[in-house]
Each structure stands twice: as structure tokens, then as C-alpha cells.
Length: 120
Image (cartoon, rainbow, N blue to C red; front, top):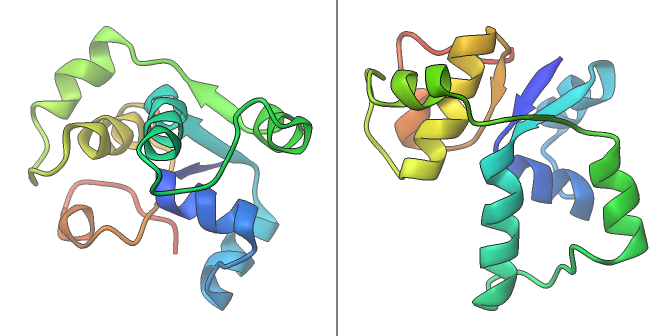
């Protein structure tokens, strides 16, 4: 299983993944932190993306992705990361750390972490 950050999930839905990302995502089941759903809704609300969370195709695709809840352990782990970034990204990263699920991201800040499990 892989933990996808918001932008990787959006690239996957849009069909704009890089070849290496496509290979990774083709081979394994997808998961995401619950905060990703909120980020998608907010990005749509402010006009940065054109996606409707009520669209039947979007509902179908997202319905196949495992959603990790934001738990006390994840909230705590997000404050103990070895990198600091956007709070939502920290929750996404902490989800990978707590569940030991490799993270798929392009985020330069998160990629500097020495503790996070990254998909290779």
C-alpha cells in the first residue's frame, strides 16, 4: 500500500503522473490521509483546481482509495517530524510514519526527511 499526498492523487486522477510515479502507483494499492479530502475541497473552493467531489467519477475513484483517519497518534507524530512544512502535509507525512506506509510525494520539504518511509 502507498500513501499519496494531495498533489500526487490529483496528478493520478488527471493522468499527469511522471513515469516513475505511474509505475509505483500501478503496482500497489492507494491510501491517503483524511486531510487530503479536505485539501481537495479547499483547492476547488478557491479555484486552484477544477474538481467536484460530488462528481460520480470522482466519487468512484476516491471510493477505491483507503482513507486513514487523523488519530491522536498521527496528530502527535506530526509535531515530531524532522522537517517542518504545511500543517496538512505534516499530517500526511505523519500518517506514513505511524502506519509505516511509504509516502508518494513531490514535496521538496518532506523529501528532505530522514525518518519518513518513501516509495521507491
